[in-house]
Image 1: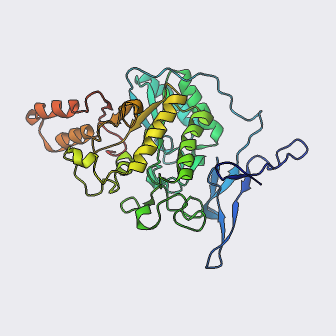
Image 2: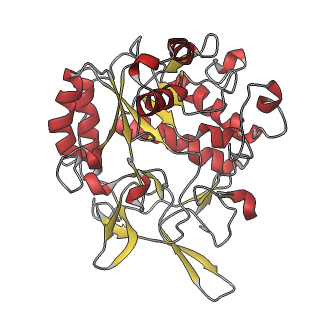
Image 3: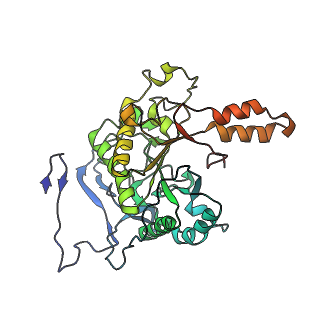
Length: 374
């Protein structure tokens, strides 16, 4: 094995008679040469694995598969990325629930049935939820186990590539709902306790646990964690040709209290005080700077309820660098007045204020509902 300048070890396994040493779609497992005090030897799914599958007749734990299809089976992209729209009209979609039938839909079915409908409705951006592999399906894809694996529930990776390429062919931009704010607590098929400790990828102790989400919190100050997450973004852009990301849970990342029990009045002491997680802010600045440098038409959207100033100001001007922030007060307002107020009693001044309340010079995505409301 060879050690690089960053301290990572690599090994090249030579081909076997011109064929890959590990056949395509083989089950693989990472065996760490470590025995815990309990006598347990640590087996893990590789952190960078690109495809995992589940056989419930054997175990609920996911199996890692070495995804390396031959050229004849590899999807070949046909269409260039569309130009970034001047005005984004975003359709949020979950592949698995995009069918009226009581089953999990597939990438191919979404491509065949949903893309024409979304185009016909006039949308120019699709935000795909629940793509990164997650063992707990009811989490809507927000408790990630395998950050580099496209969910096998909906089909193989090549089918997702076809979905994105087909969307590009009809002029639709495709964003990935990326979850870098936390991760699943799963051990056998996730990152938790990966090397037998609780702090390889995450903060150790209680600081590394999100009490409300029952999940693990990344240590953004750790160099290798930073590399892991940044490379994850580039992987989805390069391998699948996504056009950008909606960053989930940005409020949780911005503050050490994660927004739990916090009320934001708009005072600058809330945004620039000791509760701000500076390491997480630096990570988001690096992520946006990297993405917009390598992919000039990349779109990044922040999900933040706190109103953090300069969140959507370019990094070069002192901001965090997102293109848009979600106007999260708008759907709550509509639902409240629809449920509680008669039509003739609607407060038009309040409606106008809510629709126009935004940070000066920062773009927002105004919407009526998302999965949070549904």
